[in-house]
Image (cartoon, rainbow, N blue to C red; front, side, top):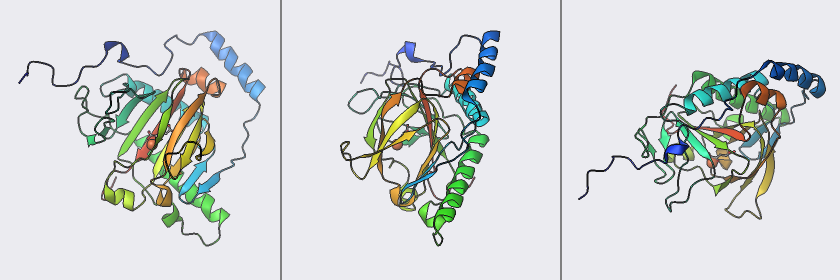
Length: 281
Ligand SMILES: O=C(O)CCC(=O)C(=O)O
Ligand SMILES: [Fe+2]
């Protein structure tokens, strides 16, 4: 048996570390531009047209404010260039995913579809989920309950969207050409899936065309636009919904966000999940 090689599969060196932010420093012109953009954009549309897309699936429009979006990007940037940071995962057949990924809390491996403490490509441990991220997930679930209570008189909001304490966060960065095929998120424990503990998804940067449906058929899937600041929740009866990202819409990120957070062209997405129902934060 050959045993002299490295313990972990090799990683193409040019891919690590991957910085989701542009490295050029902001100059004073950027600050002037920021003021101009604020004037041109005018006050942000404060109408939150939240949507109940199907049972267990709620879209909270513009839930993450500008300040939170900047903080999330900066935090993901810092974690993403460190140990356990962004890399380009492969499927079992060797094909690479059209995105960069980093896991927080626990490592999810696209090849084995298992959660592990150390990731297979380099043995790195997953950085912890920042407390601020978990707090925002909590707020988003409460906001979905408020929205549903307002919309329907006698709804059992906890059955519709159960509460969840995130143990895992998969952070994806999509360039303009990024995409993700229709799939189910079903690698958490059976109990977690059975209870319908939701996946909570944050979108930042460029908008995405998001597909969802009851099977893997792209033609019959529903489409919804996910914009920067949107939070999508799918749990309860929609926990095992097929979903994916068919395209990224270039240059659609809020200018002020790009200016302040220096996010590269593309989209950052964070999906939070609870691995096991017995987990208590
Ligand atoms: O980018 C998205 O909106 C979805 C990401 C996703 O489905 C996943 O990471 O499992
Ligand atoms: Fe997913």
